[in-house]
Amino acid sequence: MLTIGELASYAGVTVRAVRHYHAKGLLPEPERDHSGYRRYDAGAVVELIKIRTLAEAGVPLARVRELLQADEAEFATAVADIDKRLRVEIRQRQRHRERIARLASGDSLTLPPEVLDYLDRLRALGVDERIVQAERDGWILLAAHSPERVPEWMARKREQIADPRLIDFFLTLSQALDRPAGDPQLVELADKLAAYITRLAEEKGEDYIDDIDIEPPLVKLMDTFAFDTVPPARRLIELLKKRGWTGWTKLERVEPTRATSTPGL
Image (cartoon, rainbow, N blue to C red; front, side, top):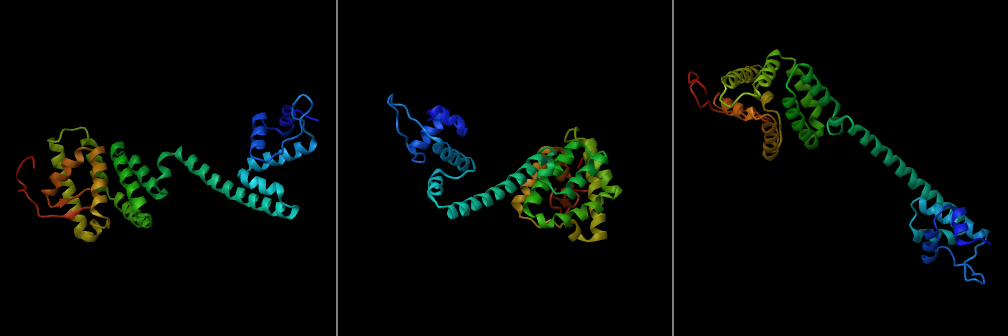
């Protein structure tokens, strides 16, 4: 005959767990000896091991009670169901582990591989990391909003990034990041950008320029991300609007609002 402590030790549980199983009606209370202590036999060890095994497998205690009272066939069926559920959980946890592992590589959790390649290409070209981060934030939103269109957009981006004029724009913008809003380099950059966009629209058509079919609130949100990350971009867009184009995320043609000879505009 075993004491409650010996029973718990044999079954690999705590004394508190044994008392809990008594309270739940899973493990019958044994007879007590003349000193008033519980005394358990080998059958109690076997039952307690069954209870522990089922509980550790995630079976609710109410279900454990049913299984302990089931016949052999019912018990085997129930155990097979539990095993099936555990295998599903294992697959789910494996997917969770894979996602957690991807966290170590940062952007790869939220961006598809083709976008990551594009961002790495910008870095390789010497584009300032703040501009890369602004691009990244915008692509996170776009990929979440319209994941099916990312390959199409990326194909166009790869084509554009091969154009030396666009590369020159990115590099010039990189140099202008730490300059004040009134710096002449921003005016020069606006001239370059407006000329580049106009030439591209003439060569490819305006649909090629304005191809981001997303709602205005999302456009505004993406622009805000960009302007917060790259403050000179806001001033640049103001200058660009005076040259016939507006928008950062979604480019649109507008009526120019300035004379080209006016300095500083």
